[in-house]
Image 1 (cartoon, one colour):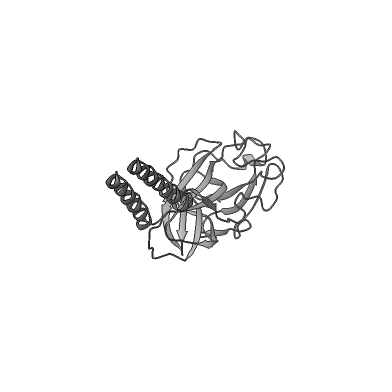
Image 2 (cartoon, rainbow, N blue to C red; image 1 turned 90 degrees about the vertical axis):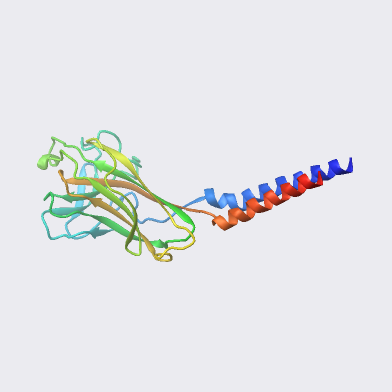
Length: 254
């Protein structure tokens, strides 16, 4: 009876150790932190329905221009497509009262040079962390009504989404989505650091790029970046080792 009681108590201790391991080390691996991105849905500046606000030398609030500005006709800004046929469905993150805009990268001279928008974040690259960058990329359609009929938006110039640290590209989605005219596709870039990385501690960055292929404009919306802490392998080894040892002791006592 005594041995049986010891076995039961030991198994209970094992269960407690496993539960503690999951609670202490496991929660950090599933808890995602959303990193701050300025003007992530391009709602600044506020734009009227069916209105395009852009510049050839400046970007929307919080963003800057990536690539040359002195080749061809180039505009970087925001578009509110409400009331037009530029998109078949409501844009991503759409809200009647607040979220109506999308980001614009308009390159009118195909094949000259790519261009886009970029932003350096306040967050830095952390070790033992998995990053997931999610961006909605849009293939603008035609609208036969003025003033949107001034350009033919048929075709798609292609896109590239990049995650950076210290100016170095960590990961990218290089035009992998097939996006129909007048719709958006969800681009995802995932990158993980281990116990070391040459760019650890450097500022994270995001680039949204129009590849300037056959087409004119790429739109972007609802840019999100999440970070999830990933325990070091040594931590998991320690937990597993303690669990195996405890179970071995239980078997021996039995």
